[in-house]
Image 1: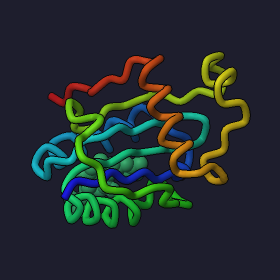
Image 2: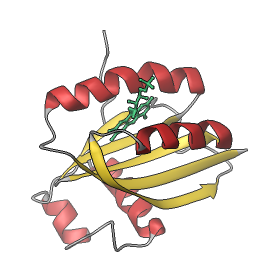
Image 3: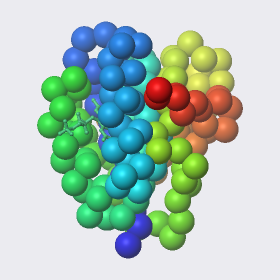
Image 4: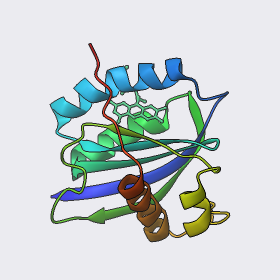
Length: 140
Ligand SMILES: Cc1cc2nc3c(=O)[nH]c(=O)nc-3n(C[C@H](O)[C@H](O)[C@H](O)COP(=O)(O)O)c2cc1C
């Protein structure tokens, strides 16, 4: 049974390229092995991540991620059954969130995922992906 799960969290300390690279270096091969796909959005003092895959795999991975001390205030926003993957081409794509992005401002002024509905937060990520170009970093 396929599900997708969305959570929001706050990085402990500033988000740096080094931290993100070290997360993705592990995530990409791990997710490939577990057949989990998704998107990691970072920026504006937040992480938002969509994980999609078999329910048990996604649940196990989420428990692991939740316990990671590189972020805090991890809050589950949405978990639901899906009939197909939305981000099937990405083991874990990276999307930069920026409050200064005029498109983000225009469409989602003062968007706060901690008080938004899960559906709205998921929609924001879809919009970001449509207007930005998500990258799946190459891990050598
Ligand atoms: C914001 C964030 C997102 C993460 N996403 C993933 C992910 O998609 N897949 C993954 O395997 N690990 C991810 N991790 C890292 C896991 O928390 C964990 O460190 C990693 O799976 C290695 O676990 P292990 O050392 O027990 O194998 C993420 C960590 C953070 C802070």
